[in-house]
Image (cartoon, rainbow, N blue to C red; front, side, top):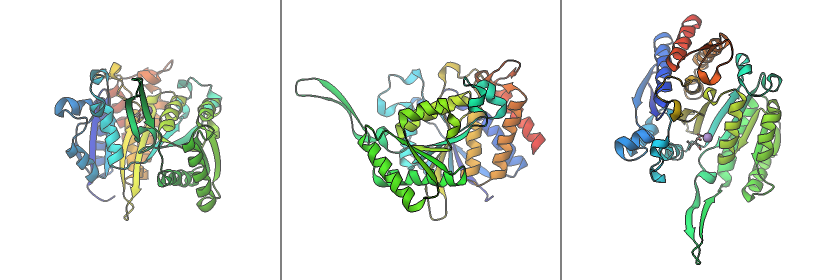
Length: 369
Ligand code: IPM
Ligand code: MN
């Protein structure tokens, strides 16, 4: 692996710093044992940045992110910043990073490890062996569409607008990621929108259909309405291989898919930009879970989603499948030995803290590597 990968670490708020600490221990291990050569810089984001700098992310931190090979992101937000104006809210820092780095493809895998089948609220036969990938469009749609905001009619009635907006290239580039990932997996793609009510849904469906015909005719393509998809995810999730959908539906459906795996504390994600001429993509890796302020600072949080996000970084940014397999394997072994944080606790398992979970994963890595 080429030396000196530049990684920007942004722990953020709530449980972010705690789960990031365990992740950095794993990175240290990789540096020592697998000569994973990297350079870390650190920055503030979210409420932590707001408290220190008055903004949810500074221009310097964004520039640092642009210059990095990968951003490892924790989580942002919390009740402490509820009264902060929206443009400075902790979430705004994350949204700005996504937008400025043009990280349009958000990959959110939902995998049920065998040892975790009992932690889901769904019946074992429904979720055993589940392995699906949601690709959420991340830089457009309702999250960024203009106009937006509150206005007043002539008669004084207040009203408010959000705009669902997509250009043809925006739909096509994320759909391509969907088709290409499907080709590497089970060769099946579900494209999800609401073409029955939304103009953007009709537009999305027609573009995906045309692209399929033109460039990916051998991929099995199905269209599904977003509400039906939410239902099918709970009824029979194993019918899915890859799902591609817009920003808002992807937000909702990925939380839903997360709970199939037992805990949102288990789900990593990768947000990728366009590849440049050398094949390098801008990338940010973050857990799907939020900052969980209620349990922050108590060493109760599950660090697995953050560590798995780091392992996605090894795969997608650094093409180091072997190290990523090692990390994923260590996590699976720890789970199959019944080591659990509170969120995935089951009867007869050993309940551990955030730090103990990190240590258990390191001990397992020592055995495997
Ligand atoms: C997510 C989160 C974010 C989103 C928030 C924190 C802005 O829920 O990454 O899914 O809505 O995209
Ligand atoms: Mn979300």
